[in-house]
Image 1 (tube, rainbow, N blue to C red):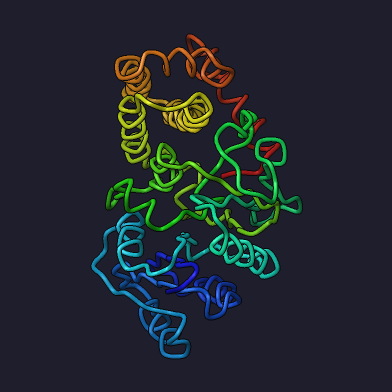
Image 2: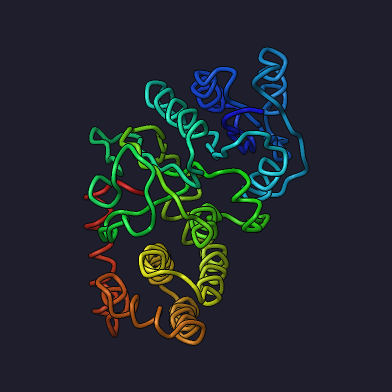
Length: 339
């Protein structure tokens, strides 16, 4: 059995997937790299994937499937994974070799110990094209370092700190036990990957290393702002699923609930700003409906998010209020380098 399974969803990724896979090979035989060719047709993604599987048969496996979208590729990787732990690395991203070795050392150490580890959290770096300044997402104030800890040790996340898929390595069986199955043919499902498992998580480990390198800046990327506006209905699909899931969680402890409310609040903010940026009456009505739905499904979550810092800014009345929302978003965007 492998220590870590890494799924790499690939769709027409030939221009950049080699950099990603090469960085993952540094993990050696302890790692299983599952390249999921998600119905690529416009380039030689499939051939490159098969080439790596032939060159590294003890490390790389290639799975070819009809196109199911990012979520479908992650689902396939999770079903096929044999590793004790599971991670997703997108094909246009890569990892830092030194940090990778430290993470594998920690995972190996905890598997020999008396405690079961549910999730390892590390840092990620925004590798924004054309930007000289790199934003690093770290959690030194939120999580204790270098040992297994529980929810009672988790501090409140700062408003500008968010735990994304890039931060996370889950225990594989936990993902299966929580019934994780991401929507197919839908973008932004990585937010569900970083949300759905947490009611099942009991133990954490935080390693303060800059492991994941999150590339942003291509015009066709799903996180490009213009692309996000054009795909706002897919963003909303994920947002609604998060609201419904949150509304069903009746036995969360206080730190768990605060953690998940923080994640949901960020997605509510993203959805709201994209609907405002779309600048149509239809989208403004969708924004109102989104907040009404949150209030209906989980009134306490609504009160917490709606009257929090970001929720308040996103719901200022009138055209001038929307201008303030957009200006606030642009300031934060410039400060932290996302999108």
